[in-house]
Length: 212
Image (tube, rainbow, N blue to C red):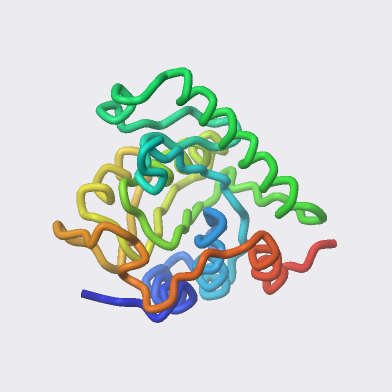
């Protein structure tokens, strides 16, 4: 089993696997942790780095366990078995709250920056890992609406079943560590996996393109 030193190492390794797209792609990262991985992928591919704001909706009894996921304007994506077990009024309120948070992040992170348009291009969608896959599914639904030529999911770690499910939306999935046995948390595959702040995300974006 591969254990990554941190998100940057994982991003560099993903970049090595994606060299056939060097100079031909745009990279779209999921904040917050996916931005740290995405910076290294974008650097390796000589590509611009954009963002896609997908938000997990955690179970009311276990917020770390995803029931659904959403972007600012895209469709609500759910585990239908889990969705049937939660109060629909609570879910609607949670959905609205996460859409507002996605909008807030767009405002904060993209201030002074030109948004990346993937239309007609290869879009490499990056996160620091996948557990249930719902957040990435929501992100991919949003990206698909932007009309890229091709969508590539690139993540350091994902359960095999979740990675296969993504191929219903994406054209290709590049996963460095995938297997039937998943350790239950993405953080288990990293030696260092701190939560990032808005300020740290902005600093990462500044590495590639300081705001104008």
